[in-house]
Length: 147
Image 1 (tube, rainbow, N blue to C red):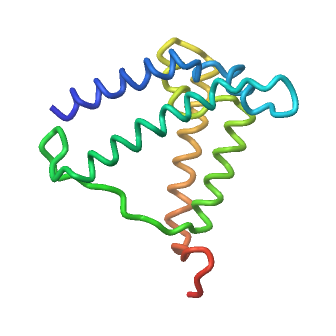
Image 2 (cartoon, rainbow, N blue to C red):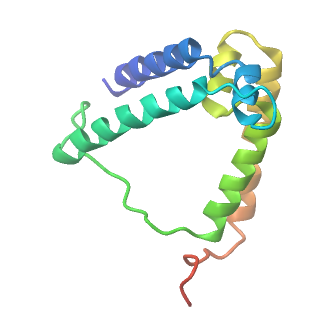
């Protein structure tokens, strides 16, 4: 059941990315180009996604069990630590340079886009490198709090 739910959610998410134009790097870069021909349409996509997420998280908080029967597990982390900030910066820089982020890249691989495949492979290598380096680093504390 879990795999069927994951497949359905993935297909809906991928269809939404295609319909919104998020799989087109030129559209994303047009949104990020504040000094040039700025394309505000992506702001509406983000606003819609935030609205859906607010409703979904509100409903999820009231549930004890997920759709697959497992216990509902909501994120509890609230700390902003240096690794979160560094990861956010790396994500943003990569998004700005490539014009694509992980979800749309995976959708584009499904359309046999070779540039997206290179992106996804590089992303996987980066994730593996982070795991290898992360095993050797002590866990940092939250920003603004003394140890």
